[in-house]
Image 1 (cartoon, rainbow, N blue to C red):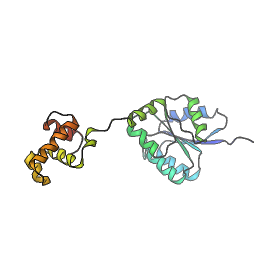
Image 2: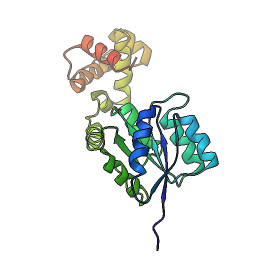
Image 3: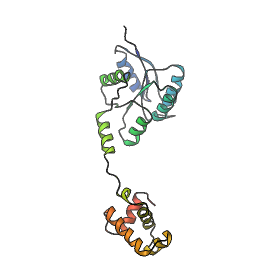
Image 4: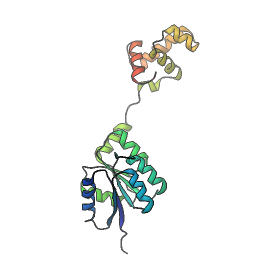
Length: 211
């Protein structure tokens, strides 16, 4: 039985990038580029007329971003496989793209045959994540929790008031607790945050947007 042709849409705001991808993919058996557009909005509109199997999607473009385009397209056509091809490897781009439903995440430094392989693997629902991106994701997931996340709810309230410059007596009055209880909370906070004094605790609270 003859293998099905994979229909591909190329989305990138740089014409040379689009032409380069198209030029290579046209030499690949079983892959047909059915269109190319320069931004996310055009990609969304294209899919209203013709439905590709795979979309090679840039991230930063005019009108709407690759992330927004991915969300809109998959809302209408969940069967489409979207492969991000970008220059960005920061967490602010990686996670929103994957959360939007992108199957794979490649960099524009990827070799042409790697992109073609990712297209074929997409048809089997196999993800391809660039090694440097995968390493960044793993590092992010392994990040140690912020020290303040181990504070009790009351300790966090006290820390926020420390960050606002309140004295122990003012904290006691605000929270309707005794001064000795406040001092105990402050001592626990300093220990858990591993800071020397309440001034450093106040700095910590402000740096971590707790006040």
